[in-house]
Length: 485
View: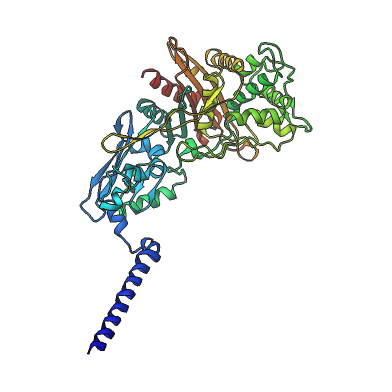
């Protein structure tokens, strides 16, 4: 009898060990497999059982949460969704997250361990933290001005504070309402299909994710390189620049849209936007020095994040002298995001220093305690301070006496540069209209805002596309909004 009890006890022990081994196999070894299974709804149910934290602009939330009463209880909502979509992105139960909603998802969803009151607290209690908040650097007035200024046209605006790198506006049009993607029903599916089939790509953030030929706005960079290299010592002295200018090693003759460019001084060439003068200056500076200056401004940088990634603006180092001449006027392979060109204008406004741009001022817990703060941002010297002083004068001249008169603001000092960028085979595409600028009140010690605006012209206005006509008024509206406070 005793032996039978021992056998039974031993068998029960084996069953218990087998049960424990299987439990360990399921909960430890195969846990990732089960967690990732499409049939496992527990993580999604837990994720949407509480409201998501908010993204704030000027202290006010531009996002919210709606209680649906369903298993996936809370859906994301957006205030002025199309205005802020290039910043917020979307948070969808079906399609995931993008832009700030993606980069700051841990804080907004409450999943980030730093939100816990004590280390390992949630592991012990099984609790979930309330979603935290993301405080942006955006200026609400500037954001709205940029969106309304672009209107129904395709284009983008980026504005930064020169002294700090704070992003004040980031707009891309056409836009979309991210709230229409928040749920997981048929309406969200139809919206998803419509947005992805739209040839105008409304979900593309053109301010940071698309690059354009910068056209004549790149002449700011070329002028900086020429002054720093000593190729130009006196901006008011005549240059040896023929009109037309034959690109080195070719029979291609470069011309200008205006008269008065032959041997024009740097100041006059900048105000008139003379292609011949700046193409020759680029050749005289040389590819190494011109590329070095472009890279000091931020070109060819793969690592820029704001905090989501920014497309690489490019200046080609592998060009011959003819191609270099075209690159120096913002054509050939030269490409830039609107944010990059706002950085160029900001560097001029900030004494030659480029501040790394950033969009998030701080993140906080639901109760307001700070989780992280932006802190000071690194700066690099893009040009000599004396060169920046000259470029401020040149850009001011463009607005006061040149092609940028539409950007003038009463009671303010404004500097700018227009650009009309050709593209397509044989320059057959409708040009892009550019304007880069900075502004300060007459009583300010330094500029308070730098802006880059690009407008994609249409076939209907092919012959009327100009940076001064289309893009400058948009930039002016943004600058006015910031200067008003």
